[in-house]
Amino acid sequence: MATFELYRRSTIGMCLTETLDEMVNSGTLSPELAIQVLVQFDKSMTEALENQVKSKVTIKGHLHTYRFCDNVWTFILQDAIFKSEENQEHVDRVKIVACDSKLLTQ
Image (cartoon, rainbow, N blue to C red; front, side, top):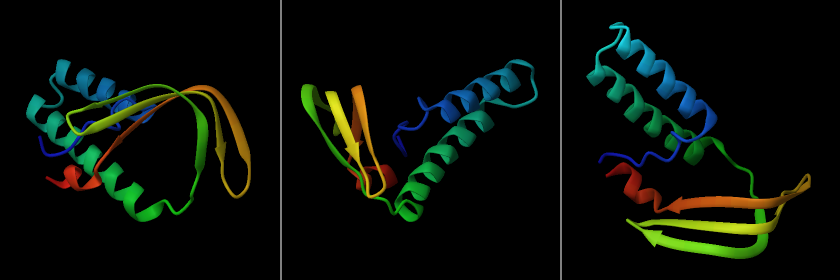
């Protein structure tokens, strides 16, 4: 696998997947090209996060569950507080998925 499918569960990723499915089902797009679009989407999102995001956020909360599988960490926090330079936000429950960015380029 060239990249992780980290961003496909986001709103934009799910909309892209649905649109590509519709295009494949209608014959407008080949399945192979749809897969290439999804792989490029993963690479583009990874590159954008590495090169364009400069903000720092601190997260504190109660660790409910954690898991490490296939070099991917998954954390579920309860009563989490996200703090940035500008503001602070409270979230009842949050799921964080993290992996080594070096693995994204393999």
